[in-house]
Length: 81
Image 1 (tube, rainbow, N blue to C red):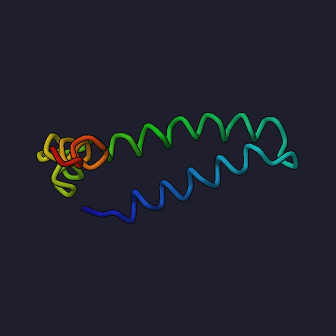
Image 2 (tube, rainbow, N blue to C red):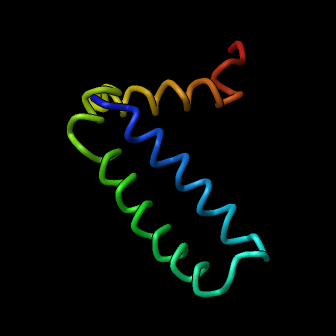
């Protein structure tokens, strides 16, 4: 799993978001950046949903992780009975 590609895409995405809010950039470039942002998001999502990344984060245990998170955030479960 090459996390560098994912991290680089996220950094580029942040730059694009920041650039679209810059009033010094002309409208045509901002329009391009908005389109690029959609494609960058699509690419990031495809990597995150890919088999290799799911294996890397052990996504097969997601239900257990959800249950553990629910137990931690449920105040009543921590009270003595």
